[in-house]
Image (cartoon, rainbow, N blue to C red; front, top):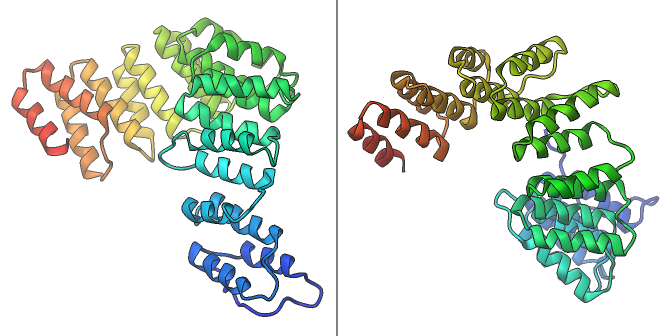
Length: 348
């Protein structure tokens, strides 16, 4: 049960600021936050900078928050500090439909000049650049990091590596990778993913072997990238070995990993192995169903593709454009033009 918020005078041992922070920590939703904010606006003295930052942080970063309200609170600061800017930049990076708003905020921060970016600021805005593939803006931020001596920060280095890998600028990514002193699991997995993304299979697999040599145990994220590399290379034997490695090491078998195996087996001509992996998955999302349907279509198994599409709809899983590519491809294989039109018109 969610904690009940009661409004009263702060306990004797607490300042107003500490009291507000404790209330916000228990806050279950935005409506209650509005009540807390409104309650303390009635105090004789203005609400403090510290209390406002707590309200801003909840509005921008909590799953129960609201960025529109966060912006209203943010605009109450005549000179917002770096924590306020970071909350807003990070908040806009976490939205379901990302935009360049975090980059715009970062530029506004530099223009206003009241606060200077720290390593967290740069990491948050680089993450935003990687999501919207804002390559030139990310390059400028890299330059800012170097200019202000923040390029050696672990947070900034990891963010730069991820940014260049997502933008498929693999040479830049490798340069950053080589400069990172602590190449931990996350760093190596990101680099492997970058290589797999651009089809540099040998480089991805070499880095995976190097991981094992230095004693770093891979996780499910690493293995998704390795399997993706096997799929692009059509390396079935290696893919089988990787699958056995996953089972032997008892690596967590999640949705992403299962889907990657389906895709790999289908692309390497082993559709029945793909089907077996699919059937063993306890949970199946849009990507898993779509990969299986596309796999059947590639192999000309039209009935299987359409049957799985029907099962997908019965399971209340929403198809996406990849699903329809598989369905339409299956229909095209057998000349089922009318069926293809019916599927498309029914779900377009």
